[in-house]
Length: 95
Image 1 (cartoon, helix red, strand yellow):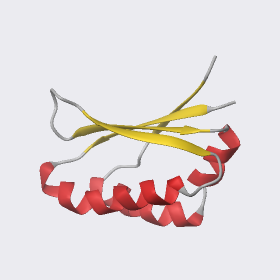
Image 2 (spheres, rainbow, N blue to C red):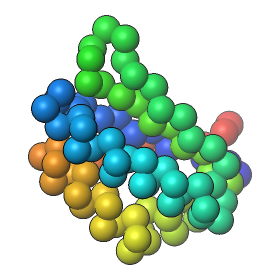
Image 3 (cartoon, helix red, strand yellow):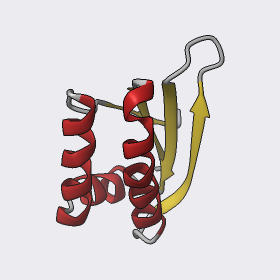
Image 4 (tube, rainbow, N blue to C red):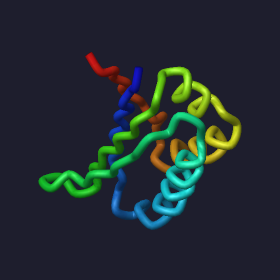
């Protein structure tokens, strides 16, 4: 069963330039993972710096494999350090 993963981030303007290549790297890595279907990034209109990423995976196991992978973990640690907080994920399945 496919799952959607929601990731909300608030990026201070002073850190946006440093964050951009890290997020691009994550997206590029994800696209080559088994079970990856798609990903979208949205910018909140009324709150600059707030973003929402929605990725779709064929299964929870595919997402779990990706999120626990070493290659992803290294980049994710850099993102969390830069933003000063651990990234949280909200995972939903189709009903």
